[in-house]
Image (cartoon, rainbow, N blue to C red; front, side, top):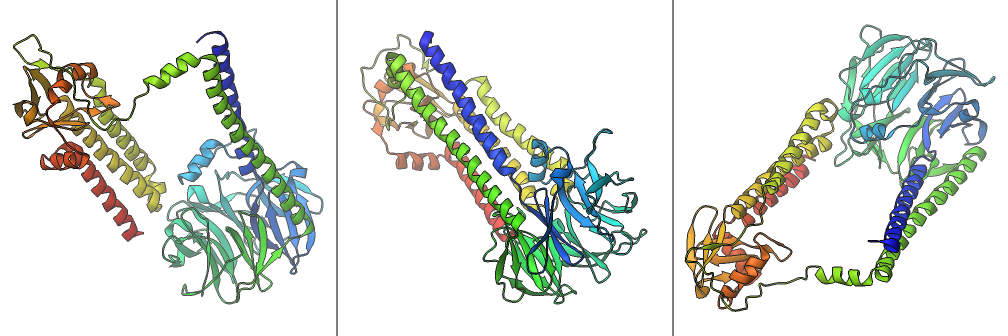
Length: 568
């Protein structure tokens, strides 16, 4: 490749990288658009979080106030709350979640977070009328990812559910730790105060728990009931208290597509509320005789009748403006994604065009050398004497490094099991991911055994020529010498008596192709040509590894799928 061809290749590579970078950038920007967070009652109003904004609504959904914490220099994440005097409690995180944070969240790994002494990340208290915020004086808690807050009425003590660390904390109003509970919960979510009691959505234990909140017995279980609704819906993550009982939003394993279930206060399920207009419910609260629910996917805010499920869309001036801005930004970044895909398609076409214009001759040669499909060996030509009285063995193309294919499968299985062992505490109650890891390891072990068995059947077999006959030696040492009329062949195998020699396919031969064409194929001219079905029947009769091991793998996979269905 010289001159213009080299320049064209460089340009194609650069523009391909540009298209990929553009696509990833636009996708990241679109994924990072503001979305609804949580909702909390603030006096006679309901405060709703959307991105960095807080919007206060009255019972009819009219906007009473709005505040963008970004205007004050903050980047709020997670939950928020209100102290008795109306001050706002929130967590400020200067930098967005990293790729490792997102991967840890995807695999539901337990996580804690340490910050530098010069970082301003942490919990803040804001006096809203003056728009003045300060960090909590004694706060040392820094949740790695999601968390929930509850400010206890009367004392202003703070309850913190650090979801990713499976921990509960009781803090003073200034953040000093009074008590903690770091065992017994798996991904604790919403904390709810009702009639003097604190309730917790213990997500990965599939239950709702009434907690003890005293310093000595903090985190103790006073009451619990399960929320397994059948099928995928087993993960409770949002709670809302009403006169009828406790509303629980129960999601699937992705914490999405939630179902609203009403329980009475002793844990007996009462009824479900249909959510026909809500695509992906995120946060719920019961306020002024209605269920208020935010839709993470759209985003939208609804007010639902708790009896009929009739939904009324709520949108104040600020929420309407933010909705419109999010929709415009969504379309804007989506256009860049389509632009990147279109650019990549043009680059692909341009590459073919450049190859044709600049190196037409070489391109045609390349295409002419591509392996052509074939369904049979071309058994033709004159039988050429070997010029020796001994057997002429056909050289094998199996190399020592091919055996590492099996070793690689076993190494991958070992690494998968190691990952499961290291993260067992986090995965123990995430059955789908846990069994996926164990099952994948088992499958890779079987795949390694299959690969090794197939390689052994190929590498230890021998194919030779003597006179006008072929010599076939199986991996087990069985030997036969046969002339054409005693042989049968297909595109992948040669059979004689109880011996089958694998040749590979037309794109990947296990023996030297030139030697096969010179010495073997002419000696098959009068042999029996068999179909694929006949080949499979012969291999099954010989219990050849090429049919036995795929059958074992298919059976193992079928059993695994059946077990998941029965246990799911």
